[in-house]
Amino acid sequence: MTGSQTIDRLSAIAGRYDAFLIDQFGVLRDGHGPYPGAAETLVRLKDAGKRIIILSNSGKRSAENDRRLVDLGFVSGSWDWFLTSGEVAWQILKREGEGVSDGRRKCLLISRDGDLSPLAGLDLERTASGADADFVLLAASEGDVYPLSHYEALLAPAAKRGVPCLCTNPDKVMLTKMGTAFGAGRIAELYEELGGSVRWIGKPFADIYASALDFLGHPDPTRVCAIGDSIEHDIAGAANAGLHSVLLTTGILEHASDEERRRLFAEHGASPDFILPKFTW
Image 1 (spheres, rainbow, N blue to C red):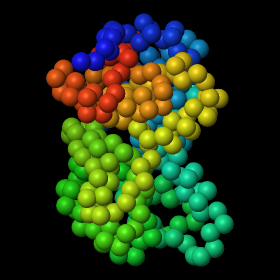
Image 2: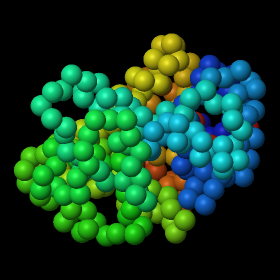
Image 3: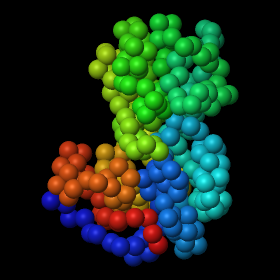
């Protein structure tokens, strides 16, 4: 049984922390748009003098997500940085590509809605086939459009050849306008099941937290609080980084029973410090 404290508003604990790492989907918005009051709560938190990073397992780069959040009605300037797993991965690929002189690497990009932004500015050649790819970049899922078997057929030739995969969106479940669907993380699991190797970038893995804490100037971890709706990604990731956390019961846990939550706490070895029904001040 978890020792988490249930609170009814974010202002009840805001004074305990200097910085917040806030998830996007399931906290600020769902597949339809912003949650009621979420934009206002973000402003109130910023007005309270807190540093805020939106920390998202999005395969898209930071600037694109930043613009999209403003377009949805969130107030520009009510967060300090929108850090995505896609941004962290892009920076890694940029560094790794510098000084490479043996020809352009071929990348099989798995994205959503034809998005090519994960490759923009990188010296890579896109290929549509796993048969000649040098690596796979798994940035997003269209699990609401295609069955998992579609991805199996696409990726099996690459996995068979031992081609490495970089997964920039570890979420195994995603929120869509039609409900939940399997996310990019589930496709990455499939790639491993097919015999391929995967490097995971994003929550709950260390790279994205290292980038966030570096941006914040390496504060006392106990003065930083992560807010999210995923026990596997947000709560476990915060625990691994030594941060405190708040679990939102919106998003993917909206219909989960207390028993199901306890099972997930045990499965992932992490419990939140606080439980909050929705992101309100």
